Image (tube, rainbow over all chains, first blue to last red; front, side, top):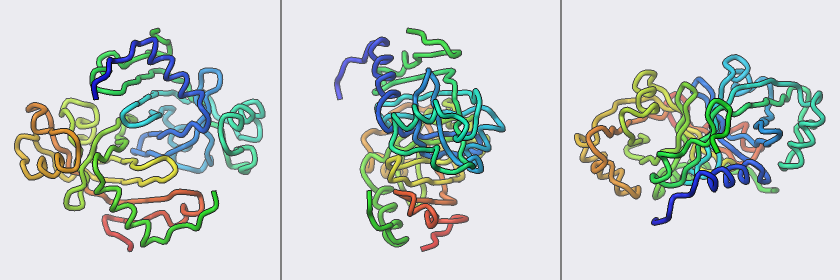
Length: 147
Length: 147
């Protein structure tokens, strides 16, 4: 495929559009190594995951504080390194639950008291399509947008 | 979506069809947590990744021996836990390179001497689409197909 590499400004715009898009599914990696697909919300510059607090992803994240999340397609990638900022039972987070259910297709608030929201603060965001975009793939570093 | 859950036999058939399909892209998670999209081949019941030996995925895999690989879509998932069986320079593996280039759209053998094949032996394979398939999602355990 012969295309011009996107500018950094365009890649940031594409990334924000993806993060705000309906039914945001991603691959969430934690140590173990552990990897699961989860539906996420983008709310106040945080990625919000909702899962049973007993699942390995929640337990590992709460123990280690770190995740890496793959979004988009394997050849139109957004990779987010994130820290766990906080977590709370779904029943105690009506504002987050509203944002999550508005963006997505299920309601964690009705999933039962064992479900938790994991509030993930991005520290690094990378985005690329083809090899020509890899050298300038970093859009956020140390939690700050570079563009 | 209302569909019958697939039988275990059907899920195994769908999984093998996916693993053998052209241009097999997957999300490869290793400890760190690290996560990257990589193109894989399915050869003699092994998943073969090809990457620069200096990349974090190769270095971590060689150090820890373990990966988890997400294939397919987030709502039609194949998850493979795998152990690193061996790794070797791409230039010293003509048979693996043939299999890899036959299935995929690039030739690791031409990528330079720093590139390596990572030969991953599946130990557990899970496959599911909707929640109703999760209870019986495990198709392989301890390296042996259950079906």
